[in-house]
Length: 492
Image (tube, rainbow, N blue to C red; front, top):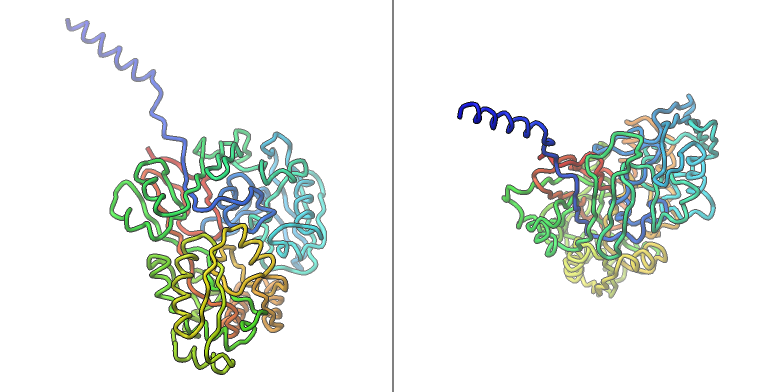
């Protein structure tokens, strides 16, 4: 009996040793509120494109890290000439695109020349304006000559708009994106989800996850049940009005971080009566920022008085420039010859911060005699009517691109703002690499925008992340518009 028991025990140990160790889960479903209009980061302004593809599928010469730092990506290192006009990038070896083709210096030259070409459709074409020429020295070396020094050049090369694409697949990336990242595109079920799979040939550290699905969940009413049921395990950009229903549940982790999302009541500065400074100032005084934050963002968000993230070292608190003051707002309208107010319209894209914020702002404007008709629009309409054709009076949108105060110097930008003094500051900023001097210039730029009341500066959009407590590797902050899942994994 004793020997038989010993035999069974030994057999059990042998069986246990022969079984594979328990493997952590390797699939993930992420909820995203907006579906991208297409899947090419180099051909569209919608943040939803980068939120799926940045760092996951596509890579640039550099990349922006979770703290906003510039990190090597397809370029493993670089040298900068003493005068700051020549950048020599040494590229990583053994890199392949997801279709099996080799990555080399010619792909970099093609991508940058394409982005800055006269017929370029790149939404951030201005990022490449300083480039004079691009030379593929050899397959592993690229030399970029600038027209003048550009202090933010390495940072600019880390934007989603600057990712490297191959000439063979560039024209089809909108529907079938082919990059060099740790995940490859697998499927896009329009209106439902986008699926990625681990790229087995990835040059760098492989991702922990084998499958990632980005599922379109447009509102908190649907997001909360999806989380509670386990159908969706993470919402890196969760809508604030759903947080109260998740708080206190030990199955989930909630992290509130900072973004680069300046939320604005944009005004068409060349359209009457918004071409008058007193009118823009009156609107700014009419805005009760805290009430807007409470009603449209569940109390989450930091008030701003100009176009800079409070998380930035260059941030200047200018919220006191236009405190909520209905009486002063009415005085300014009277000075503008509009004592009896006027009628206008406000076009609102789909996000809840815009739709809810629009209702609150319309009510606040009504207090000073401005009747704002609310016009809900879908993103495609907003991009066409507002962003491209400038066919609008007022609108609400969060500008989530990083360090983008220079947009106010762009003559074709939808604000229709033109101030030579501001342009001069931005021109000097572009030539400056010293951090202290850059911060000083950024402070000057913020002050000019506040004084000119170019837009109604509302608040910095919070990044509210909610995910399964067993997940780790998500970014707390959002220095760039991305859902980087390259380091995300299940802990058990």
